[in-house]
Image 1: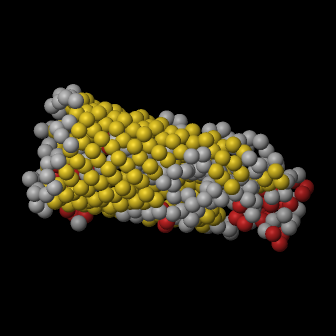
Image 2: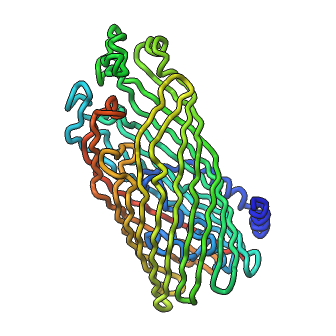
Image 3: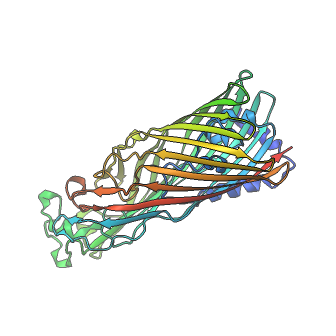
Length: 472
């Protein structure tokens, strides 16, 4: 199968042999994909993979197949494209709002107010999600394409001394996904598509460590029993700090089915597989006491670290229907398998005990409806609304690294045809969420992290632009 994809990719690139800029553009886009950050995701899935589809809030994503962005949402749609296409899109995440308001957070030993009063500022981070697609028909019944995008990511960052510093300070996850695809026409109405996904993941997280409280706790409770009192280590006032980073490459696949009942109605079904990553990296500690604690306890020394992350499978069912020559309606139901994420565990090479955060995420659904209107041969207008569930089961398991909640999308889009070969698409989406609540208590695995009690103000905006070039 891999040889087939490699052959078709070669054929695809040779079909654009007159465009010498293409290899350089591909490399540049790949590098840009490694530079985005985002705190606007459902879970940490970034659906922002097509500017055309964003205008309808991704309603009909698996059935629209209006351009080569269909590689991501349903590769079977490649057979609807009569010519080769080249697309470059940028999705700008406009400083998402993620501000924590404290309602009585508490420290294990110091009680309410013991964690300070800094609420962290706006944890949301602006960023860019790029995508690049290219395709070419190989025959009347076979088409090939290649996509480069960033389907998962998150970025949150708080003030270093904020109330929730022991839970999280910085969280940054990036992905690059390289997705060659083939589509085959089975008959006049049914097409199948297959894709391979070669995916890179890179993650960095950091948080403070309450060394003062560890020193105050008795050895029976996992503390140091006051062994380092001479160092002046007071609870919540003698913090250490840790930064963990790692990366990995892994494989997955995507498949799609497109059923065209007639020129007015089509159904699309797609599935993207789970991709299991095993990140390898480094843990860097900064601990008060001039090395005394590290030397005598054997803990908090810089060391290697590894962590397993399963990026979820996604299934979608979509419908597209033309009311007349100008109006079209579309709808989509998508399912994401977040239930594989039970916990985030860091396994240290040193004697440092594993770092564990419980998530117990649940599977989610996303519902979207949309419409498009063609006013002339040059303009097309798009509108859509969607409801996006959060995988976070309750306020106790909500984490400041990703304090998500159910969201409602309102989206609009505009397409403009400059010429027979060049077109431009624009889209804007506003995302509203109920105020996410965190209700953690200073017990169990959160004992040394603090009882974080408060609500977030959360909303987001995405502005997207795209150029499409038809290749003769």
